[in-house]
Length: 378
Image 1: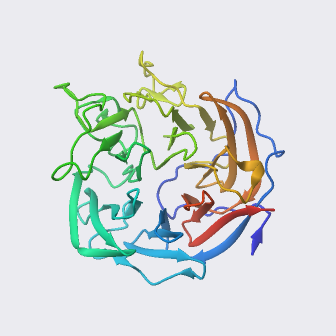
Image 2: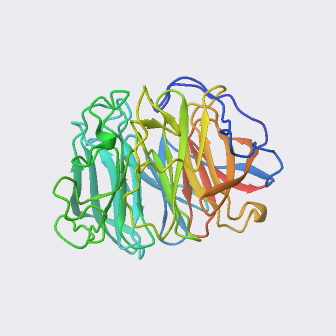
Image 3: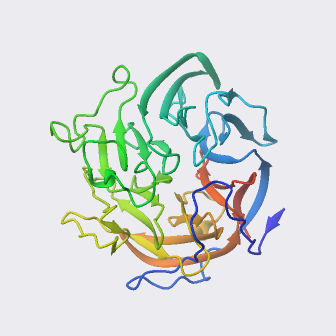
């Protein structure tokens, strides 16, 4: 089944959303065009509220379902759950099983979820012959959440072998505690830890705030509102973060592979490139590489991946992303941290809540209603 027309998005399933809006570029960026790669979306499976995916052993993709199950996508579709923590999590607000990741050699599997008390939790399992060893489970990191929204929850291993963890600002709207700019909390941050280097983890000594008595050592970057989905470019190592906006601006942040960390993306003094509620732009603010407003249908950016597959040759090197409310897939051409071209790919996956990348660099879009799409050539 291939979809070439835009679908209407139904609002309200996951609570990542606010008012409606359509993606539009900000002033000094090129206008989005439809002259990019010709792609189609092929339905490859139906899941139960999929939220995240990760390349797994044996050319598989492991799909997280929000209620707490993990299922494996292979050539015949989704199998039965290989992990089920549904009695340990809740799906109220923006909670649930929110992220999954493998280490480089597929010997350890990590899950990111909110427990029954709403605490963000990262757990680790050993993996043997492609099978999760549930008796090896241990908790790596926890963070209490004051509200049920803005949990973040994505996890990825970077090219450096460390685990990166995205946490939202604690929710409540407008960052009432100012967590985005505070360095004494993990909320509103991108974290970087070594889960195998200590008990329960070690902090890399080159993290930017190690040794600062007023900052958490785990912090890699800060000033984030709800970094729902982020990824590393498998070709360059660059980091891209889709940070969900408050009410007016959605943003995509970028950091080069040789970054030493410490980037301040501005929230809650800034929403994108704009002062938020009279805020003052921090002197060290790193503005987004791309932002769009909510004058149309978009409302909640869904960060994706830089395409490094082989199926769609014209898409190679472009960053593919979407929006939960709009659902249209779009791409950015980025050179040296600046967008040089934008493209409307002309297809919609509905309520696109996440993306996944397989071991060959091919991309999948996940709709919260259940459809798992693969990006194919048109």
